[in-house]
Figure (cartoon, helix red, strand yellow):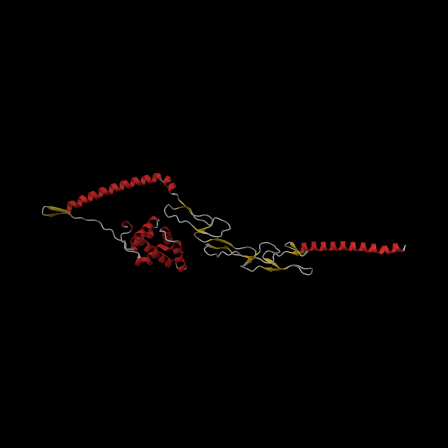
Length: 316
């Protein structure tokens, strides 16, 4: 009886410990469930504890403890972001669009809950996403633009062979009209010369000499002293396209822009001087011809007047 009485308290204690353990686990489960319900942005585990996640636009400053909840800190405006609820100890750095020679600019600014997005500067395109470097759009000089340059696609120019096949009839008609015009001019010149010869024969003994009378065309002055006026007429975009077509290095063109970032006339003057030096004595004539070929007839007329061509483009 005494031995049985001594064993009873030991068995009783074992049962008590088991029951207490079950109660403790149950209470912990209840606490965990309540904490999960209280965390609006979800939970994460840290050192065996269930902690609340930080909301988007912030990061964890201190993990939760038995006595305190997770402490969060906001992302720095304009420098950091965090898209989702998280357990990270720092925010993500914002993407920078100001990268050397990348030709990018900000499309959407960075906020604490969203990263910045970049886009190509005007006159540039990028076929890949996300874009790292934008390339200059191609300039169609001879056959014109078929599809304009966009943010993701380069310019598509009209193809010479396609234009030839599409416009065969028109070209044939143009050739025929040209032939007729040439014949008409030859006949007119022949008749004019016959009349002039008959009326201007000068007798000199037994020798007769007709007076020669040839129409003179006005000569264009060189660009040099007129460069500022010409630059104001043609503008930077036209000057840049002319320089590219003439084979002037893109670095030289960019230097003109860098040296005159806020004055398009000054950068046009600088590039026009470089182009004139390259083209030499025929620079005036080539400039007018380029404007005509580019269908910039109004600019061509004004340049001719500046350079001394009083009778207009018909004499150039």
